[in-house]
Length: 533
Image (cartoon, rainbow, N blue to C red; front, top):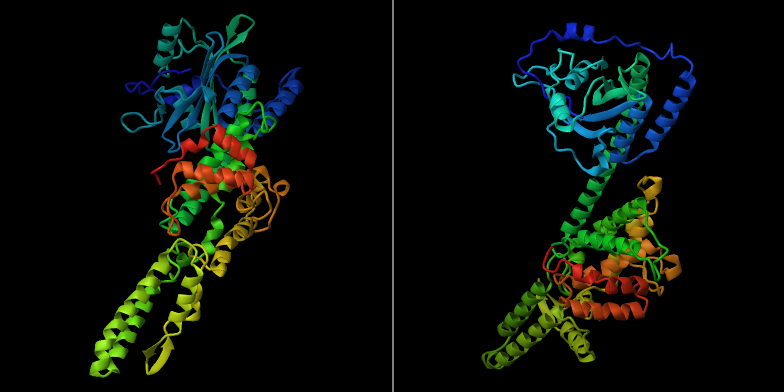
């Protein structure tokens, strides 16, 4: 609950003011009777706080336990802002008013408490700001009678709700470096139905609890920040791999997005094949990271292979080199012929143009070359052109091999280099010390080209050997590859063509048929961002 904004006109000597605030014991020695039970309770609470990994749940637990330990009716938890200039409202609870704000219920929109006033001086007029600035615990018997802090905000709250704030305990939460990371403000200790001041014992309990809470919060925040850093780093790696090729930009992100849509849809199933399967939050996170990293092995693939647009493409498209050879061959024929022969050579020039145009068409063809095409390539290759005083073959053996590629633009050796990215993905990721809950990332990521029928790579696994998570990534990867109309080696397909092709793939167990059925029946294919990168 808010204790009010600062009073900028007040210039109280707060050193003196603090001396008038009830002094508190510095240890738990002197606890009577129930001290052992209290210590046991603090130990249990500390264990529970350390086990909580969700920030919102942890903050709510801190407030609930603080109220129970001190008998407070209300509590407000402030968290220090990242720039350490203000205290931000995190949790507000008042039992008598049945008020619960913040935490899992959403961010509180009340303005934060500044640690400096409008003149740039320390804001000692606000009790919570003062506690944060001085790192002291403050106990007040009745805020209405206490004049050294501005409690106008508290009075406004009381007027609007009919509440009566009386006793208050304000405790700084300090981390292991003695930095204030938050403030715990407790309101109205009660004994039965009577509101009483917070006792020195309650204050010591609150201080001990605040210390435990600060450690738990710092640790949880650190873990969360490290996970955020890891995710950001992974996305940067994926972005870099995507941007390596102008044709595959956005592929990894789209595969990751579709993977998670499929996984979450599986979690929603209450009947059918996936009715007994539920991915936990940790498993979903592990799957997401696997999807983001599924193509990391492509870092080893040379760009001229990854983006190979024509059969003769290497660092440059070698059809241009062949063009120059044809020109040399034509000029050589003219130079070595008599006048009469030169007239006849015009027909041979047309023949050379026809042969070069044939090679140009073969270079960009998207259909397998016929026997006649292969034979003509070999005949052309046998022709000679002059080069530095020697006669060289018009086509090299390597060029003949590339022009004779049976499908696509890749030779079997180049295709193997690309397929090796799956094994390289595993080798790269298996070197990383993933935490236990993400230990299967290398496997899930590198198995996205395995097929249930056993014809995939790199290991030729069968359906029983391929984890469900890897099969989900595989389907998302196939769908995006088929839908992408910007690949250099294939024309784009319509959505209906893609779904028809995937239907056949599911029948042949090239992709998981059960995942495809869910993908189709739930209309996930309609959520593909057509026309967007």
